Length: 502
Image (tube, rainbow, N blue to C red; front, side, top):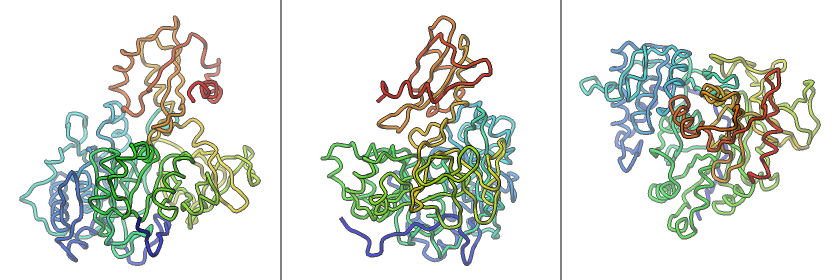
């Protein structure tokens, strides 16, 4: 296996850069330098820098003709593919803000998010799902008659806006407070312009979206997949000599459990950085990856879409601090606080709080939700503890939150949908351990007679919540799940089912 002569060092995402340019101009800059160099590969087809920039510029002019202007929100609800990235860059080219969404959102969820965002345009394959909002299909955003040359350079006030489920059962939108600026000559995270990056994840998630778009802007050759497939990921690494691989632990698990003869078919020696994000990684799985690709190659990032703060850890440091998610990233402060708001001693579990050095509110604002804070410090709701050396360990990721396959599922959102089904008196949704997904969504449903039409409920939920949020398993009970105040002992219900689930 090849090892980098200079091991990668992950630096802070979002730090100030020396000579920033508008993100919408980055593809034009890279195209001017080497128009024939590969920029983007999807399903065996590679688009050059020059071709990609021209397509983006035509889309931008087409969307401008449809009324999009600077600082508008524009929703992109498309499957993974070049159109997703071209539309996003076209939005930046107009100084507007992209709002990436899953194309598989249920109609009700999509409508709620559009009401929050108030978009100037929705780009989606099924235009009937956009409701009253202006809408175009992806093909309608590309008019070949439009000029493919660069547009006037303008930086969007907000880099992106990411939708998320909410603990109240209603969605929220996380608006990035950073302007859409980046230096085309200063890649972050240790990337290099001649690198090849593979993103097997969905582009509507914040980290895959951000990493993929910035890699394109920095001149990397980016490989994307229509959906994750374990063996295809290895084939692409071998075929394109991929240097950077971004994953969630579920992907790592599905690759690792491939038969040895399948994993052995492919050369992964080109990998300089395997970065995993979004969910806690089982220690045994991480150790196997470290043994396979090398400790200096494996990195973990712990953060949130809000960019309140975060930590990172190399595989080398992880071997010395097994189970840790690392030390706080430069540019942020980290505290672990008890219920009274006092700092916890090393080893004492408390809630994890961050503060950007630029001050509270510098990194994000919510639409449809309120942050949770103690003084100036805010929290994502995760529990954990620090050791004597300042390494952070997660005790539980957002006690109520379920992280399944790297995607966040808020129980209240699922419960609200289940409780609307006739005959359901109450429901409680919990996450149970799952070897493949990390956690699986499990619903405990209270009915008067202890019966439940699961097939009918599945059909009912299919038009209300996204597939990854729907419970994989159900149980039915006549016992009261909530007290008279509407409170539920979710932790106790989960604990009672942990041993059987394991």
